[in-house]
Image (cartoon, rainbow, N blue to C red; front, side, top):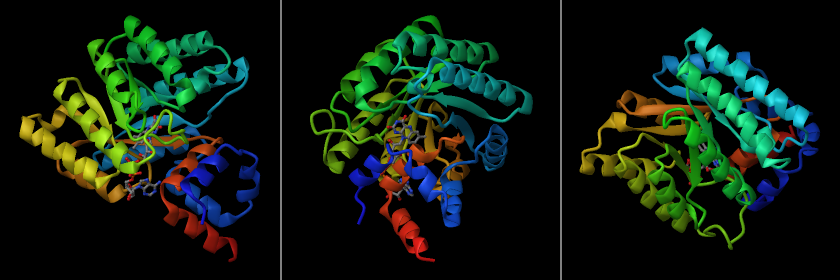
Length: 305
Ligand SMILES: Cc1cc2nc3c(=O)[nH]c(=O)nc-3n(C[C@H](O)[C@H](O)[C@H](O)COP(=O)(O)OP(=O)(O)OC[C@H]3O[C@@H](n4cnc5c(N)ncnc54)[C@H](O)[C@@H]3O)c2cc1C
């Protein structure tokens, strides 16, 4: 059986994409998690979500870009998305990854690229969320975020923290002082025990502690999870502290627990769905498989059909 860690390893082997896409069933599985390969497909997925009472966040899939020219294409893509949001009237913000903007080439390049997107979003009254990637770039990501936050408002740019990292509670406390809007998630990358809790129960316990800190701050944050235990605890904590439903939002990934997404929206909670699209869907897709072995069984069974 493929383990989480083997799947996370395979998520870094982009060459495998050519092999797996030979199987037609694979398309069926990818379209469950990825809205499509172009912006049109993402816009239509977001319209459907909006009709169900959910807002969205665009994510153009393309990690670990290796040339400055490619980062320019990414910036243009995001400027186009922001324009499309404005024209179409859909309810969505955008999520970016700094490696997409050149963080591993030169942090200054990533800052300048991200700045262009945040400035455009701010001008349009929209919001940019900076996703958090592997622990090798955690500090660099926070540093770029702080520079942007010094120039732009609380409601222009926000960041993500991962509860599997030991450092996260300290980061959360420090970022709240700025103040900052934070999305808390469990964390999706393969991390060593030197930096991240190896046991899920510790990741979950840390998630709950950070969630409580965020909700108590009075700032509007994102509680990103599909885990009913985390969701129930968030609802319970908000109720016991008299924090109203409009003071935070739940966030989930496209195609995962659609039933729960609709239920929470129906119950009057702010529900945002992260909508990934683009040609470079392979690493994102593999991380989603790593989170749920049942999806791998579906793949393996179909390999022989
Ligand atoms: C909006 C959003 C943004 C995110 N941004 C980041 C980010 O910037 N950086 C980062 O490292 N991670 C990010 N993540 C991913 C996150 O870190 C987790 O890897 C992912 O959300 C799974 O954790 P969980 O909280 O859902 O709990 P888990 O304990 O992993 O899962 C709880 C339950 O959710 C369901 N579920 C979870 N994943 C799947 C799946 N793939 N397929 C089917 N069912 C599933 C299952 O029922 C499972 O039992 C983001 C997640 C969300 C929702």
